[in-house]
Length: 188
Image (cartoon, rainbow, N blue to C red; front, side, top):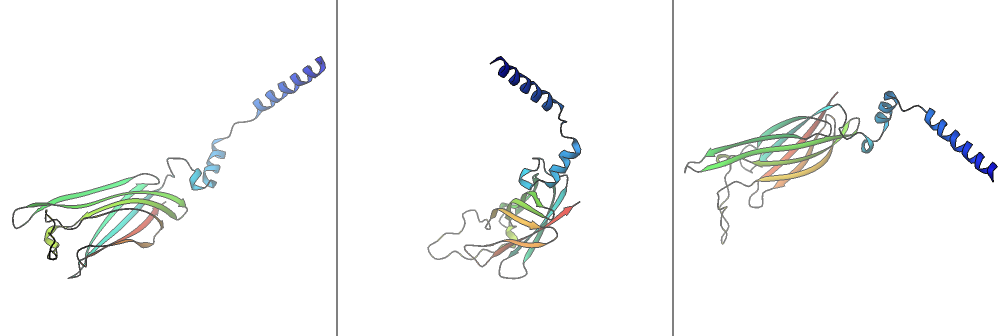
């Protein structure tokens, strides 16, 4: 019995000494693991890479030339970029109406030349460029006289350098269509 206890104590002591002698992981080894790990296992703060997201919003009202607005956001991997463009116009009857173009975007690199981009877009054009159709019989026009507001939240995967149509919305009361194209540029 004493022999068995002595053997167990020696084995336990040997295992403890052996584990204490193992070297901790070096910084180079940790970096190597981070480079080869899938995106889901990469550090929370993302890669040290900037990305530019160019959005082109095309507002086609069915009459005349479509109106195009371009917004560009530069942000780092896994961080939010936010642009707020707001103003007011005064109509011919002295009403002040908001003009809005807001974009939030958060890119996350999923492969070398691809990123998943979460974004929210809010767009309300100037009243002077919006001609609302007459109200249908038995209905009332918008009480505020505001043009339709486009508000979208999307998550898309974009390839570096390629422009993609990411949304097309239709106005519920007219033939107006608003298209949004996105282009991702990974800046290395």
